[in-house]
Image: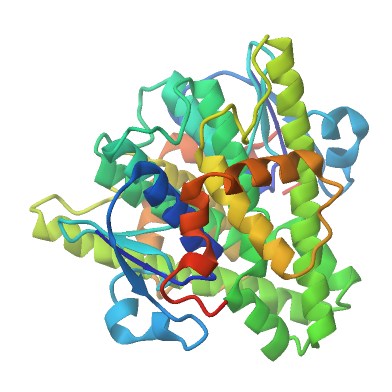
Length: 222
Length: 222
């Protein structure tokens, strides 16, 4: 497999975590977003959206969209599982992942920040305020959801979660940790979100997350 | 089941389509977004994000995030299936759905438009230009992806798709059709996207989509 990605792309980071968790070897193929390499014809013609990450399977299939890629990896390489077994529990994990991937990250990616600067003529301070607003309000929602899930688990007599859901890494952790990285990089205050911080710390104690993080990537400029 | 939703919310519309396709009876519980009813304590306290839609199961579980809800419905009520059987095909469908749900819709929902007006002081024309830009560029990407998938199917000897993927309604159709509705409502030119228009027309020929559309909702103001 080949993973086309960028060290700082949080959608790429999600897939890197999943590959590490499952121990799946792959070629790391850097696509430098700031240099516009994702718009080069060779790359852009392979998918409709010309974004990162893309995963090219051993059969040459080009897969796009990070959550879809992770679910594919989970179906083709089911152990260790990145989704729980039960439908309700899977819905819990997917909803947390989507709170990040649909409600936070899309507002802060490069093409949107470029629109703010080039079309709306926002200055650096206003652009950063936008970024921080959506990270902060989105992670506050995640924190409230984690609290609701903790109560639900307690009511069902389940052990408290160490990660987003239970003790096993799930799709939700793959999405949340890169978003916290983005928040930290933009100096978003997150210290008062204890459940989110707890998940982040527990994940970063795992080798898979450390090996997938931006500073560990071949194209890192950190 | 109870579906808390708003007639004009495209994330709500996705779930309404899924419920209609599967023939699942439910109570329609309107939440008027423009009146801020989603922020009322009774509603807001039940989920971390206080958005629509939420689905309350017969067991009283509150499910959030439209794609997670649809996957839950598909797992608990598997016929007719809203995802294909194979892992690659499922990845194709999920990626199309996420091209809408992650790359287009988040930029155009109410809270983001409010930020543009109240925080960034955009006038109506600039707000509408923002809206149209993301719908148009996002659906152009969907159109390119549909063309790539058509070539892939032809190379594999599969019949051309009538809907997003094949002839059966999938999660991708549940996401794409509401997004086209939003584009039409904002007068986004889409006539030159023939594959997207073809999927839209084929879906709207089906009773399930017509019964789920905003104008058919009890709270419709259309």
